Amino acid sequence: MTPSAARPVRAPRLAAALAAVAALALLRPASARAAPPATVLHELDSALQDVVARVSPSVVQIQVSGFGPLEAPGRADTSVMVRRHVVGSGVIVDPDGYIVTNQHVVRGARRIRVELPAPPTDSPLRAGTAPPRLYEARVVGAHDETDLAVLKIEAKGLPALRLATQTALREGQIVFAIGSPEGLASTATMGVISSVARQADFSIPMLFIQTDAPINPGNSGGPLVNTAGEVVGINTFIFTQSGGSQGLGFAIPAGVVEFVYQSLRATGRVDRVEIGVSVRSITPPLAAGLGLPVDYGVLVQDVSPDGPAARAGVQPDDVIEAVDGRPIHSLPALATALYQHRPGEPVRVRIRRDGGTRDLSITGAAGHPHDQLASLGDPAKNLVPRLGIVGVTIDDRLRAAIGGLRAPTGVIVAALTADPSASDTGLQVGDVIHELNRIPVQSLDDLRAALAPLGEGAPVVLRIERQRTLQYLDFELESDRPR
View (cartoon, rainbow, N blue to C red):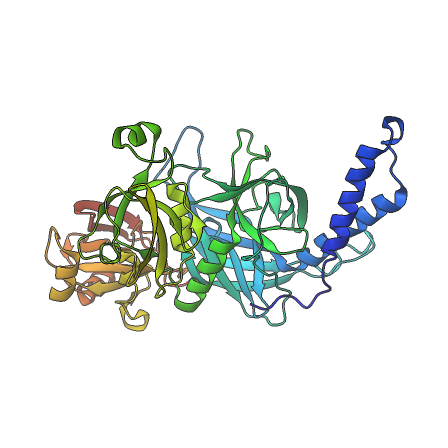
């Protein structure tokens, strides 16, 4: 991606100004600490303005209309769907109109519009006089596990920001969150990095950047930037009891964002690497009971026979110390490292065994099985737009590869689309559709034939197989055209 052609941020000047303020605060007498020289404060003020001025033109407001679950006090995972309007944030990462945001911002979207920031003005009297620049956006791809999505608008020469994939982060480092909290576009807040690798949710196998820069609803999908104006993360969620910022904000690291962005832009999907091992976190009781050399980290429980890890020499009870040079202290660290690994390249793994360490190279690592399904269907031929899926008829070869199906025929969901006219079906990649309104579905033609006579608002009940379990999904069909 190409950095913006806008004037560079004077990061050294900002660092020098901050250092000068800190030094003055420590070295001057207590009676004089309240009044550092005006020139130092002016330098700091000007440097902060430079960062915000450089970054803000690249941060967009995302306006989404569509359907989502009813949010009611005391109710969770409700099946009641309502029309909703969402305002989120995004960041331009390519001058040709590619934008990164959160997947949850555009989930269920029927229409997505992107508003670019108004040109800057030096007078409040002229603020808001320029007409908004609105663009219709399409979803290039979305990835649920990392909560990232890539949008495309038809525009050229846009100011883009660089993803800081090679920039080391430190606790205490100053960062800025830019976005549209509560719909207030181009809002900038400042804080520090509280942690560079926080497992914020034990149900999510990923590490996040934690910051105390105020983040509120509407900041989702916007960038967390450093003093050089580089994107170090994409703001994704907060911990709060009040609904507003409590200084506990979390961002997806730039390295993960870069990998997912490039994958979605190239193929519309993310081929994460599988090396063929079953792993678990090491706990002190586990370490004591097994006599492990460490009481934290990741332990190999099992190795798939004839899999990539087995061929490389990985064994059960090995402790994984590093992947591709990245230290592995937890399951989220392992998942994050594999997300950033380039498919097709050997995975370099350092393991601890019998009191020593060994460096192994795992070749032939494959993408996740669900990711591989996407390559089976040709979107031009296998698309079922009203369901928002790419479906593949199960044949003998596919049946043997999947194994263990409850029914031998059907249509497997190879990929989900972001078609705004599709119904919110609840289908997931890997689901097998066996019936539609009690009509047997043995092929893609059967599925299309069963859908053909149904109009807008018609009830649909799918009998599907998910993880060897049969279940029903019910919904109402949407219109053929986005609203």
